[in-house]
Length: 231
Image (cartoon, rainbow, N blue to C red):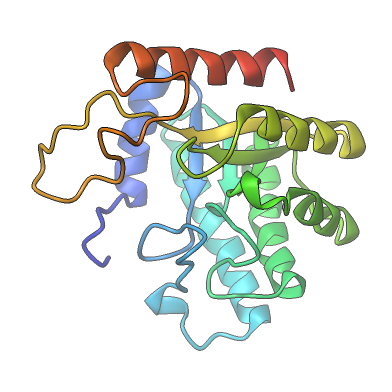
């Protein structure tokens, strides 16, 4: 890795065994990168650098299958597999949908083979930019096999809950997909406790949600209520 924190398959197996022990299903999130992936960084793993798309597609398939087989052999109850992390037209070093969809298909294929009952999720970000309809249309055009269109939602950057609801509801209705909020958070304090600059300042809260323990609780409650009852 690059110092951003590492979670290899051995760690994932241990986490999964603990989750299964307590009756919880595991969400397996494949970033397909040596560093965490987000819209600004989708670096190809060092081991896959220089691969053409056909070889990289096979590598994604084999890697996904191998990891999931290790989880299954350990008795881990996998309920969902996330093929890529915040893949806004960028995945594992690929920058065009024609190539990206091959990688998504490879991850989905491996999932169906090892955990046929698990949901396959695709994960996107930045609903405020209005590109979700385009992403969903591309997935439909290329007939990508997936069950869940998932979104990150951080209110400081990602617009209103009403906008998120409208976008995801349209996708659910148009393409018959499940939708969900894959990532979210809200600050409860503006104090500096780690000696790094904060992403949110004391005055940087969202209207209606002060930066406080109660503000955080209210925000999380409203996100959950929106995802369950409004989409």
